[in-house]
Image (tube, rainbow, N blue to C red; front, side):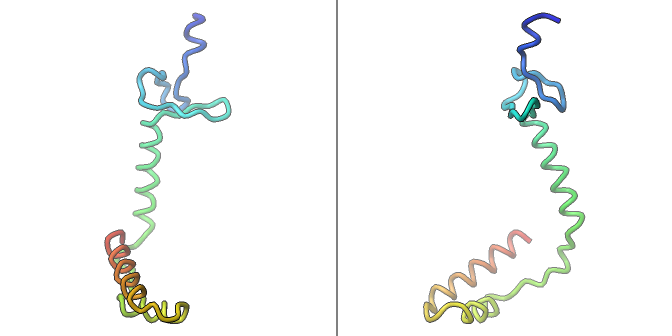
Length: 95
């Protein structure tokens, strides 16, 4: 093995050298490239989507969220309404 090959960093998962990837992240005696990280992320997201049943989610309405906020926040009516609507929209978008 040439001296140059010994110093060349490679992804521990796919074996690609540092020059062939955008980013190589180091751990204790191990490296992972951005491409392998993206692949791992896709696998995890697929498993999460399979485990989560989106049809079972019953989103709370802004009015219901506002009522819950009433238990914890005194006055601040405009802020509670705005927060309730924003939270509802956020949940609706992501679920």
